[in-house]
Length: 89
Image 1 (cartoon, one colour):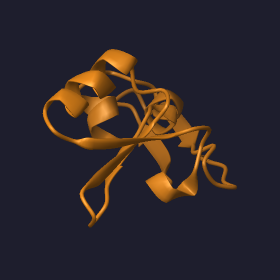
Image 2: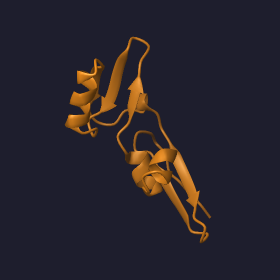
Image 3: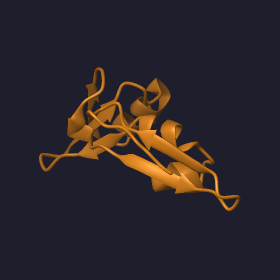
């Protein structure tokens, strides 16, 4: 989530909603369906065993984020994968 904000300039909400992935001990790579098909195909071509998660699942984590900009503006992001909300004051 941090990289989504810092490297890609996403808002906190967009950062926590972005597609995720998880590597399992059995070697399977679980990805959310929001990950572009071209990326999934490329990973499979590199030998990864890809499993696509349909819909949102807490199996791929959860995050809440509060960001305070240099101007003092507070922005929050709450993950739809979990029951959560963000409050900043």
